[in-house]
Length: 109
Length: 99
Length: 256
Image (cartoon, each protein chain N blue to C red):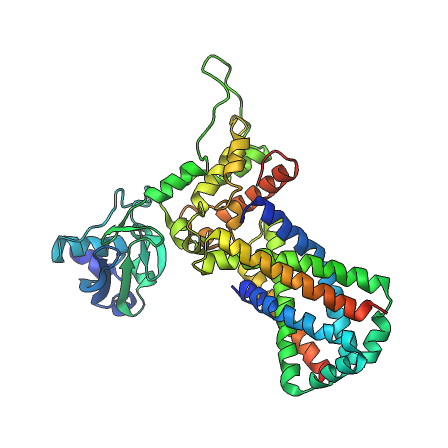
């Protein structure tokens, strides 16, 4: 972990803190109201706001989780720092790709 | 350690979460089918665990941001325990709402 | 005189003491083993007393370090029942539950023999963290007055009393998991120098503690702060370093 990774890690964490609270509220709301798929999609389809919100969330979490994973691999596995870094980048890209696909799935009209 | 384990668990869960949401691409009924599948108790229990991990990771992260950026205060361990307790309460509230 | 003292001892204390402690000491090098000895328990006995008893009366081949025996030098640090402590300042009565003690060399350092470790890595990391004063004035210039109540000096004073005993280094999870990590003591010293107005080496120092094994590897587990026998707080010092390092990086004064 160096200063550059540290700054990105803490910055994405700070960005996500309010996003997480909103997401938890959304989870509770959906569970409470027993929303069906069409209920959910009716709310999200064509919505710029949800696209922006979850798009930002996906970007931030991909970076944050990748850096976190890199640290765990470096400290708990025999991988060298470089290899741990590559695995982490790979994982971050995977998350970003799947995440964008998921956001598109619920937001595109 | 709780912070690390919850982070790892969430990192493993996330791709699955994204894949599930992507089912909506294939149409509403597919997504609806998935949602119905998640109505089963074992899945709901897993969701409660996820809410706990999510909240505990958030609160652990906030604790770190406090240690690193605000003046030192005693009782860090107690803060950590409190964070875990609050997470448990949040997860329990979720449990109550889904059952 | 002796009789008078013994009569003065409260009955309760005598009843609580076990007559003999079961003491397991690490013998050998990296791949040694614990050997167990019986040591008579005495009032106000310290763990260092116990180790010394074994070496003097049972096995003279036991190797261990100590110097002052009164909690000033830090030489006698060992792992006692799983935690690194100064053995001269650890009362047996407080840690020997059930009359048992397990004493080993400090963790996270190579073992030379028995209870003595090779502390070179600890001191090398001190150098790598640039824990060395970089002067800005010569003897021909006026002495710079240092006020004791500026925030920077207060921060430096709070962290300055490190005597390099190695307890924090031995307690640290991150040191255990990350071979590059400079460790709490080295980083705390860097922090004191960063807060020293007279020092001129801050850019190089911040660069030194911002890399792979630097301050950002710390997870704030706080074992260092809990166990430091001098009541220092490396976690807080390292938090200060993280802030300074991030600010310097964002301003372009140092690189990743």
